[in-house]
Length: 288
Image (cartoon, rainbow, N blue to C red):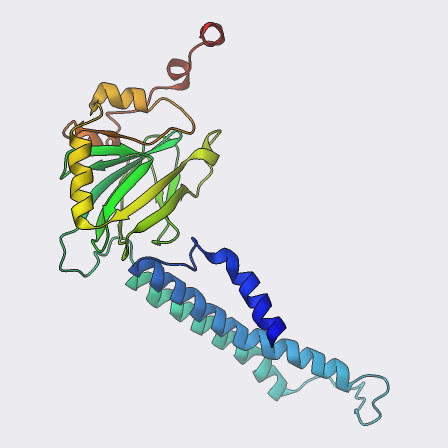
């Protein structure tokens, strides 16, 4: 038993910070679906393994009590057993997935008495832009949210398809050019949670990470005030500069955001420059 306990501790020791360490209601529900599916499958896998070992042991060459039946071809009972168990497994796992997919619909608002915070997300090469439309500020590669408050996301891409994922908060969702997807998440407790791109998108993909900082409501208000008093303004010109391909961009904020900027990105009226204009010629880069 001690060896089993030590093995379990060593195996689960690396689960901190991932989907098995949820910090929000969506992530908790998704972990439960994972555990339910695992339990259903183990209820089949474990008896199957034990039966295989039992059959091999019983029909060993030295067991004279085992019946040797070389003419055996068919058994209705065995056929029913062999096919009914996998069918029940598929039905049970499929039922868990069906119910869970409806309960955790990304577009479905979270039940809460607290007014949600709206965040518009734009995936760029290779960075994340977070716009707070109701607050008139924006941030890059860093998302600050109030703990215990639902967050309503609208997500799009300014280029190739990407994937927004905060493992401890749940629900990975794609961002695509010319359309906006919706997602609702919540962090139940203050903390710092890593976010990432879960879709390969080119040279800077490895550095396309961000941090979600969940803070108490009062501290969130202080952060909003500080952001409004520092940093540049995010207008069409600043967006064009930001949209240039760049890697490992340090987090920073914009003190104001031009009205309708996110809608312009979605409708493709604001598009990132093409590589011939974004990347200077080799001779110019050498001079720099």
